[in-house]
Amino acid sequence: MTISSDPPSTTGPIRVLLADDEGLVRSGFRLLLDVEDDVSVVAEATNGAEAVECARATRPDVVLMDIRMPKLDGIQATAQITGMPGLQHVRILILTTYDTDAHVFEALQAGASGFLLKDAGPAELLHAIRVIAAGEALLAPRITRRLIGQFTARRTAAKVAEDRLAVLTDREREVLTLVGRGLSNDEIGAELFLSPATARTHVSHAMAKLGARDRARLVVIAYQTGLVGPDS
Image (cartoon, rainbow, N blue to C red; front, top):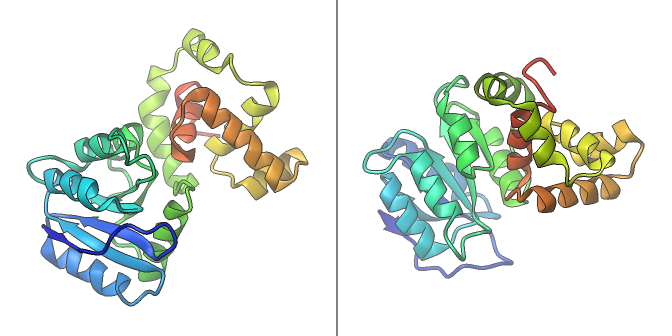
């Protein structure tokens, strides 16, 4: 476990925690990120338990979290970090080897804000970190439809869905559906003839009413309640 002595900052570079049991992977990520002016690696963890400890100690903005790690896996570590008082701002970006990894959905349920394939290029990784740090979800529609649809379709119950979505207005349901399909605020606005700012407001209202930590959780809810299916 490696921890920087630099204090958290709300105005400085994006603070990143690397959590992976493979040293070469962590070294590669650090070499890539350390040359960026707006990104700073503040800690490295070799397992899930260390990731939780490092997150508590350094309060990073983003955690690059491998799923398969010893002592505590990435899913359990994600659940502990996102449920920890004082770490509500921390965003978890799940790293996975395969885009069919069943555990990715479990990670999203645990509070992750998105996922990225380990073989992603440098530009894609940097983009992912910046998107997650800005509070957005990183969920590629192609993978999301197949993955989340597969693991939620059989769980969907119409009565439960209606009860859960009863707090939303009709417009908020429309917006939730489009969020579930992977549309950005700009795209939602264009689809519904709204300004991006208005679309963002509806997304925020839906998050608040449904108790969703972030946009990624809204995607999960859209699939769980049947608003969006694997073929949408």
